[in-house]
Length: 407
Image: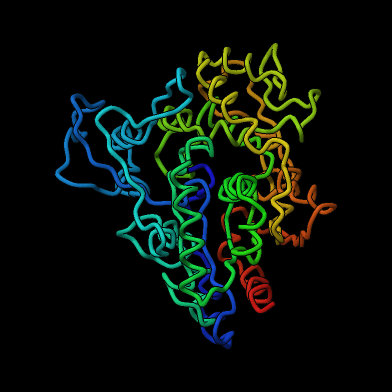
């Protein structure tokens, strides 16, 4: 969720005009499957709760309703209902999580594009906070692709890390094979954003080479989080308001801490040194070697257990052995260190010491794909001043995608 930056309508409407006048590619050579990042899939919920956190919260619902992203729930007091319904419960005995008691969830639209084009199913406004993959899908359609046939979507429960996504990976393999058949046995292009790339690396590392050679043309990574980022440490410590007006970071921290994906995306000790301070407060500093103490000092020891469950999943960045186009932004101010002054720790927001990156992911993590260059084909393309989520609607990025898809 911390990858989704809520934003107002922007001048990016220029991009839509530009796309409309671009000539078509003709019939696509290879189908595309879109994999979203953290916060990029809709989540539906059905309630049957014995108690609620606020008198305005519903205990039961007759049917599933939109839980994420539902802008109507992002207002004071009501957000307490959202947090309690969205949070996960960690089970240390089997290293898994489950929904909040009385909450049943499902991820809609597997195989389709609509549910990852828009985050709020009731608000479809181009280039707004509800738009996600829509600009890319619109471009692909104008280039000759067809929704749900040669462009398909693979949403999943982004609250989870790869160790809990076994069913998704099983379904994703079937989706790749089905898309291959539906498109005249044409190899599939996987296009993923943000954490979706970390999940795809885990997926490819688990598949036999013969399967990859038969079904995968290549993989396009947008804003890949290969080695974590500093920003999740803020979610764990003091929460993040996600740029939502009137919402306090503290009110949403419980839910952010509960997600295995937050622990999964913490900085890797393969890319940050044990002398680099990530979080500082009076009398104490924390590096990648101090996570256990970090969580003890937050009185959230469960967080360290969650981190230990997931830090090995793609830690060594084993090459996927499929061709990769690794695209990301750079030269955007990105959290590099969190500095808590006296009285701020941990329930107030820190001073953020900036680093290079795409506004969300640090540059060293974005460049993690370069580790594969000695083993396989990696095309690395950097876009100056392009932010982590804005990459999905940037004109130059979409133009470059067109070039790749013509190859």
